[in-house]
Length: 564
Image 1 (cartoon, helix red, strand yellow):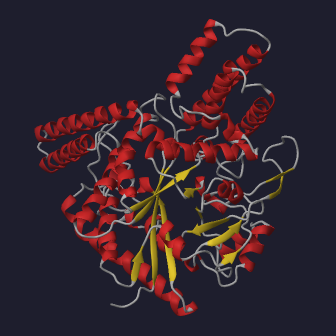
Image 2 (tube, one colour):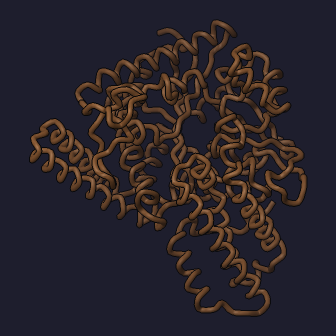
Image 3 (cartoon, one colour):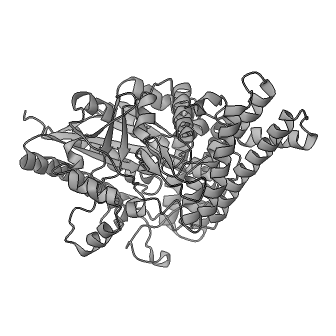
């Protein structure tokens, strides 16, 4: 058997913001139920199927702490059961309606939907409604690697205080350990957004410039050995006009980094970053853009194939099911043809084969150019597979089976790869993200700047309170500060400015951010009142209980998380 020409790491990042007890449809708990039904349960089933077929379903799976907290919650477990039952009932009603109107093909599709959701319900019961434990079981068997993350997906380049980033990391690791029983070594940076050490001007006017730590130092302090970034070299072809325009907009630090990288490419292996404080090494893995765009690109990506199920067109106005195919990716919803499931298997098989060849050719090209094995890291939002791209999980199944039988490609988790291939190049990374423009514009702009003004004030106030107040000696203060800390973490979620800036669920994003800010303010005012010898009035006591019900995640807030 020939030696592998390189390695392949499949990385999926699963995340849903805190939505339990915060609305259902169109924005709220349905986000979580849809992701669980269409992505998490199917991926779990796919792992077992690939294993039964004699292959190793090797992948690296990021489960954000806020997602884990929700998946482990009793509200989610009962809510998903009810959601799946409603799906089966809706499909059954649709079938009867189609039959009465003489539409046998749509009736057949409705029958398939009823079977799909019914099987998911059976699967959920078979794992005792415990998705986190089911994934942890595969991790404990060495089949998959599970990544941790920032507690609520806070956006690191824009957070004001180093202590806030430490708290996000520490709270995230604590949730992963408590819920999964796993001590994680890898972490998914929210939005692949990296911030270096150095002098920094706050994104909105607040207290002037300050020195801050790099993310890698705070990760190293908590035992994290690797994280993930966007390809920092894009664009490479500066001769291309569009790339040149993009390049001209880059910061001096980013340009310097591009020129200093020399022959390094994401396929070379991880970048090494050494913490100046403790000397610990952290590795940054960049995704291979050329390979990944074959899936996520809106122009050439597989999900836009006309045969596949159309995501956006649904039957009815509320929680409708989907019965149409993409047809043409640029066509209007009124021009979509009926979906034919029997046409899908051959297309998936062909595209999984094409993707396997693309990985192999990328590895071979690198070895031919540089004379050494390479690694392709393909990282995606997990919810792309199954939820946005209904057939995506079956694509992953065929891909993993293909890779198992290809001796040229060594498939491994990122953790396993790092053990045998430590970084050989150490560089100073510039600040960037995988958002539009590779910077912060998606999260701070004219629509969201006010959010950061509010959030900075809360961060600074919370820092003063935890530093100066005698909470270690007073249980009443400690309990209030823990509540304030929880609301601050929830306020910091990158999801709220993201949906506002993108025009997706704008009202919901604003309402959720304002809600957590309001609860933070209520608790902070009570802290001042208690410090002055006052008591908590009945109305505020009711508001505290209401917050405890609606924000019943991160049950073991530790105020030392914010200690430097």
